[in-house]
Amino acid sequence: MGIWLLRRVGQVIPTLLILSFLIFGLQQLMPGDPALILAGEERGDPAVLAAIRAELGLDRPIHEQYLLWMGKVLTGDFGFSWRIRVPVSELILAKLPVTFQLASMAFVIAVLIGVPLGILSAVKKDTPADWAANGAALFGISTPNFWLGIMMILLFSVELGWLPPSGYVPITEDFWQSISTTIMPAFVLGTGVASVLMRHTRAAMLTALSQDYVRTARAKGLKERVVIWKHALRNALIPVVTLGAIEFGRLLAGAVLTEQIFTIPGFGKLIVDAVFNRDYPVVQGVVLATALIFVLLSLVADMLYMAINPRLRQA
Image (cartoon, rainbow, N blue to C red; front, side):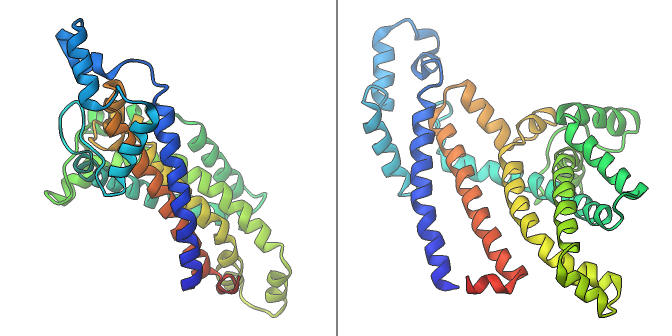
């Protein structure tokens, strides 16, 4: 186990280095000049623009800019926001808990809806329950987040007055108020993921239920619920765990529209503002932090494999 973990960590390091190179290089393709935005009313003065570029290091060759940035990142320094002069690491630490709370709630909702529906659909294949579950999954996948978010605001905030339409309260300040401000956006995000989990759980369960060991368990006279929950589901969960790790990372990185609709100050709003203002250090820091989260989630998924299926520990 320890050797395997060291080997996986060894694979993570070059992966992150390659990602950092891509993040920095692709960002240079963004249109616009950060110096023009930062100069404000003095953007017409060449001396001011030259001074800003020199201060930010934009007058250096791209490879030098990358090496300087990467050297600081390796020490934990993501630089300063060019627009508000705040350390990028502070912005990430301030916004990450917001998005993490939203993504965690959405993921819990997705698992509670998607996995049971997938199991039910597989066990009750070609029955009305199967058709209803597949119809719900199709609705969840095809419904745009922005439309569902607006409809939920109209229903639960405008018509019924049960929940606030927007805003965010930290969970450390008021637990229930924080839940009330994030439950709608969490449900909006969770429905799409629940649909994907449902379809994959159904497919994995159908494959597991057709295996010889399931037929053997049934031939031994085991109860159907034991066959489903102990034998079939345990093996069917392995591909679902992989998908779950990927989807959770996508929730952390892809909540831009939902955060904008519900005015939640998370990663989505931070990255959108940074892109519009050509705030390169913030864009680089947020994207690199997101990539790191994806890699760590992949590592966690591999460890969960071994917990679910002990035979993999010998691989």
